[in-house]
Image (cartoon, rainbow, N blue to C red; front, top):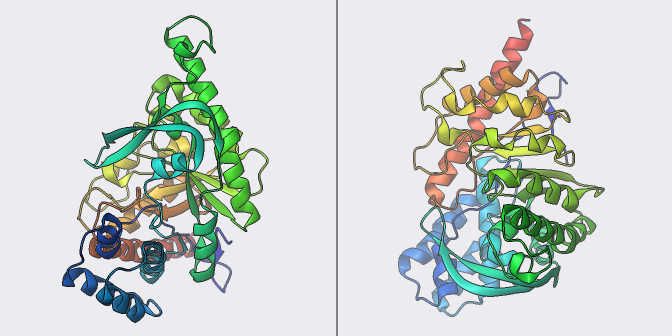
Length: 397
């Protein structure tokens, strides 16, 4: 996998573009999975997008939907094909399938692990619900839970793949603790914050060693070159950031792969200085557009959402920054020129375009395919405009 590309002349920097994670699932998959009947508009969605994206054999899917009673697993694989082609058609260079075959980033991991019991549902930030479980015994991996998905995508993808995997700390902080906490007697008799921290540390590190790491090892054996550790819960507790860092290091240390992490919307200043110790992290994917102005310009005053990026620049191990340039919380479609200016400001701050990749703030699952596609196409076009501007600036210096 090439993380940085040069033109044929060997002079013009080509900034890598990649996705972050989820895409909305198509209505024909959602309804079939829920056991609901399909409407003509659902079948038309498969027909229209299959033709638009050039999905090989999509007529077969349409015929299957028209006959009724389709196989759910096969529909999941069709959804993966469609999502890959959507990203590839938009021009994204490193892709996945928008997690089409997964239930949910937390539930999918827990369902394939030992030591958890379901405890109902809770509401997430986007007014959706996810199943929450309690850890009731020592957690361990029941079976590698991304292998079949990854092997299938390897067989159908035209671009390089980057696999998102939910991290140990997020699984720990999103779970009820009925095994490691003070009530278990494992960490002494106290019930204060120090005991809570000790329990959380043990839980997260056990998950890292016994669930996440063997899952990563299995993917690497299949040929995975880039694995993104998703940690939307990383900044849930300001006094637990060292636990997040420690569990990340436990997960990846010594493994031969390009590891990145995705940090969801937070006060990113909180992560410093803790993440100075994340030496195994080669890239931080971070959402900035959500906080930024929609006006054009490349000065610091024009780009308030990007103020913190100098701290990522100054990390001692010099990671790449996955620069979020698309706000995934709105249907506003960023213009190529706005994307360009966000990139140019970041490259000016970093002083090294080789440490900048371009991506959305987060997964686009809350946006329609129409909106997501236009956003991604403009992201790619804006990246090209930034490359041209950098080339011109380099030629005049």
